[in-house]
Amino acid sequence: MIIYDHHLKVYYKDVDKMGIVYYSRYFEYFEEARTELLDSIGLDVTSIEKEGVGLPVVESHCEYLKGAMFEQKLIVKASINDIPRARLKISYNVFHDQSEEILARGYTVHAFIKQSGKTTRVPNLVLESIKNKI
Amino acid sequence: MIIYDHHLKVYYKDVDKMGIVYYSRYFEYFEEARTELLDSIGLDVTSIEKEGVGLPVVESHCEYLKGAMFEQKLIVKASINDIPRARLKISYNVFHDQSEEILARGYTVHAFIKQSGKTTRVPNLVLESIKNKI
Amino acid sequence: MIIYDHHLKVYYKDVDKMGIVYYSRYFEYFEEARTELLDSIGLDVTSIEKEGVGLPVVESHCEYLKGAMFEQKLIVKASINDIPRARLKISYNVFHDQSEEILARGYTVHAFIKQSGKTTRVPNLVLESIKNKI
Amino acid sequence: MIIYDHHLKVYYKDVDKMGIVYYSRYFEYFEEARTELLDSIGLDVTSIEKEGVGLPVVESHCEYLKGAMFEQKLIVKASINDIPRARLKISYNVFHDQSEEILARGYTVHAFIKQSGKTTRVPNLVLESIKNKI
Image (cartoon, rainbow over all chains, first blue to last red; front, top):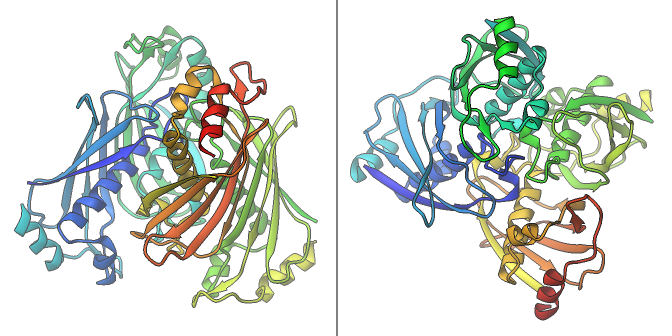
């Protein structure tokens, strides 16, 4: 398993009138965390895209267990559990920085596509980096 | 089944550097569509909240089949298929306005909570409105 | 003066924990309104971009007079008051749909750039459309 | 002058189809930077709000000099230059982390309001913290 702890703080922009983080914002948190996870194993997304390969999200999921509030500090634990075949799945668990209480959990699934828009196999660059660290 | 067609247009704010709608934006589209769906059966969320009941999202899901692009017109078909017990599930299908091609589909699950933060039963107001229309 | 009334509704995604629209969201409302304003004089942004010209925002401004709230209906009046030379200025006034009370006002200034990133003159397509309608 | 350097990174969520940060996102960056600026002088916004005082934005402004791109690291330098009377003005300059090139600059003006919605004087807590550090 490859795992990365992404630290962030909740700002006003994230919080709705119930005083908790608006539900779609978690997917922005997930994106931050997976960009850092990939970066931590030598895969910056900019470089992957320069090779003509995009990683669009094809599926996303989140369960909201407890609301995160303004000025709280969170940890998003992003992880890759399996070597990708056609698709890459990344999982996320969101915790309070201090209480370590879990607030949300989810996943995203990514395809690999060429500039033509056609699906392609996992690029070797990505596959090798993941194999080496998993 | 209660169903509502919500029409919207993709703007620059929604689109990422792949030229397609960023994945978390669909959850904003879903929220617009469910607010209009509930409104169409006489349930404006502001009134429900004035009774001291919130409808936080407890689960969200989306599958992305084809990217929606800038200045395209979309229809989000939101639907309630079952009478809610503890939780209310709303489903969404996103189509091109003209080609009627499906672009994305997903769902959200909502709990009912009191101001104390405790889960409560489906308010009668909500239950009766849904029963009458389903 | 070219003027366009863009109608919209405030959703949960827009509102912060003070219960009013979060300040940066007005710039998304402004973008929706200017896209529709340009469309109303035959200028869809997609077509302008296909000619290799982008319209990045080079300046933005907003004054917030009264908070807009969840489920309120708003009108964003977007207007072009002058024939653009190097830059295009668009002004916005945000009103309550019913009370006609003004809630916010602002403007954006746009440059015209080629794909090289260099500033270019106002494309003829844009200039003629504005001259014909102003 | 009170000054704070807020470090951040540009993610996919921030970038539009021109490949640069979408114009309204800078106001989210500004909010992050001012929350940290205030925190750095002992003023967390949550505590101010618990005293029944809100700090809504009444004016915002930004000039965009050069586009920031995906995965770039930025510094937002937020500063308070004057002791607030009725209103608090905060200025922002956005730089590339490495080249130190300026990308954008702007400001926000904040009022102080009571829960009644009425404008109030600058709370002593805020005034003293700023006077001590300016």
